[in-house]
Image 1 (cartoon, rainbow, N blue to C red):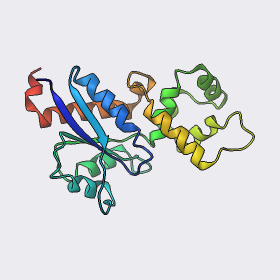
Image 2 (image 1 turned 180 degrees about the vertical axis):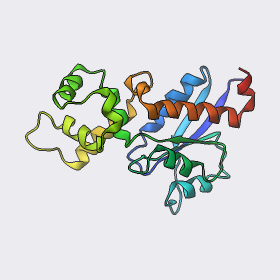
Image 3 (image 1 turned 120 degrees about the vertical axis):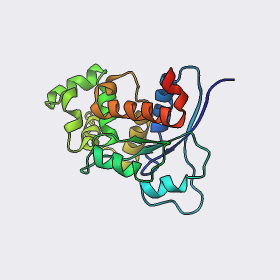
Image 4 (image 1 turned 90 degrees about the horizontal axis):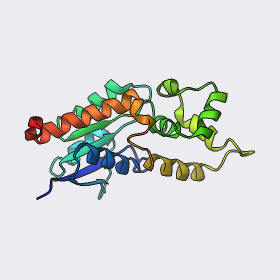
Length: 200
């Protein structure tokens, strides 16, 4: 019988649900051959307001892992991880891009020569992506680079969503500290929920 993982993704809103596919690929890379199902949790009734409430609301749900996405914003990665851990649920895997999910998108785009050329013209390097104050704005500028005026918010949101879902787990994102932390958090969670994995 193959190893099976039923997992949930909960985010700040629906705009980052594309991360579920990325995280599913990451989990599958860590558990080759496993049967993995990772989907955004579908809320019925009132949607909880914050990460702590969302995690507590899933206490009785039969998930093996719960991936909790929070942008670090100005709070910082450690504060956000502490926030995700506060309900004391061993299944939780904090997913904390620095500062925003767009930083991971920018890192993923780094393999494209057109993006590298554009970034160089802006004085950007891969090393500074996590230090950008507003990576969402940087992504917006890149996607509008050949336009006379910025695209509508709905079009940007749609393109951004597609890019989020296409993030390659073996791409340049793997060099970012927040991504490395995600990998460590996932490895730790796997052992917490299935201690026998420690022997592998």
